[in-house]
Image 1 (cartoon, rainbow, N blue to C red):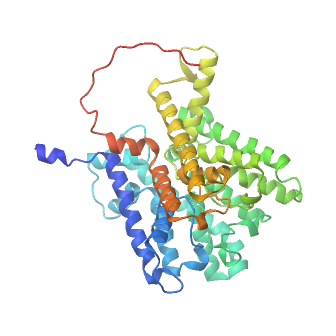
Image 2 (image 1 turned 180 degrees about the vertical axis):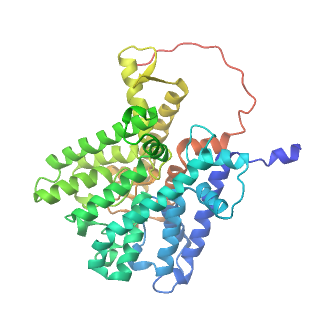
Image 3 (image 1 turned 90 degrees about the horizontal axis):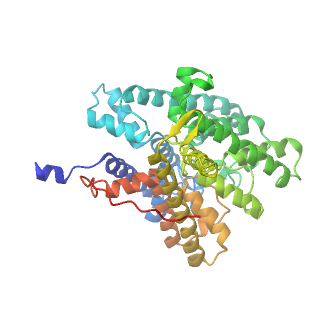
Length: 444
């Protein structure tokens, strides 16, 4: 029995191992000659970087997706994006459903951790709902995008492009096939296209608000009062982080554009940093103020249990509410008539510190290794750890050392800061329930 327990893996370790296995297998497939248009072997570094970026739904690339990879390579990338967006555990559950296999109690616990559900009860029903919801939204997005790409590429290729970009947008991946126009150009050629901008924004937001919020909307419709506290915080924080940055971009960043493009670019660049990775404007030409604001948005990301990355909207909301409670000298951290427990507040503070240390510390390393200014390096490292995929254009020219750092950050960011540490230390403090004496210290 002891020997068996020795090799027991926690849910966090299984999730980590699952993502790692998918990335390595994807890297192997992408390295094959069949995956490149030229029919040549691709270096393991480039294959691993691309597979990690796709599975971790980031969007940073070292090879232009449209011009370098073959149809097979693009299909591998799309499957990796879908797997990363759904989550490895959710994809495994989908196959179990198709094969009509019963989900064990340990499997249900694993599913609960994978989708960040608050309770084990009803997790199978919720996972089914997530799977069907993803497929429905991605299918609807492809249908709405089809007229745009049909006009550009014809019926068959237009359908493939519509499906690829719908999945990439909903999964907040940021991979695109617009390199057929100009390599690494993303959606800049469509900055004035109302339909494409609107559909991509809606897909990004739908994928980024979290599966728990979907469930609330399904159960309560649009009756805000009936929503859980988490959904209320996600929706209000998300709305704030769309409107305020969009207004700032409208007045201070894109003032020289025609009105239609000015509105569309302001909205799109306010939404895509959390954490889609598409762009309709060149971030290499953005002002320092705009870059700093975008770094903040990237760091925040989407909601917990969503396809988006970052430290999460929920985390930012809890930190803001906690700050308000401390300023007003309140005993409890409360909002919308509900109290937030101390453990959640501590987790939020820990997550903030993890992402700040990783983002800013890695930027210093990148700047030193590549001899580049700090701000573009900060933009790149935060984009990686928050699994955003936006870039000022420096990614393809980075050395393998810097590329390896970004690979680690993407993997860490997709798994989540706490999941990585829980996977590493899940057994370390098991059974140690003793507490040290308390002593107050001064802060502030």
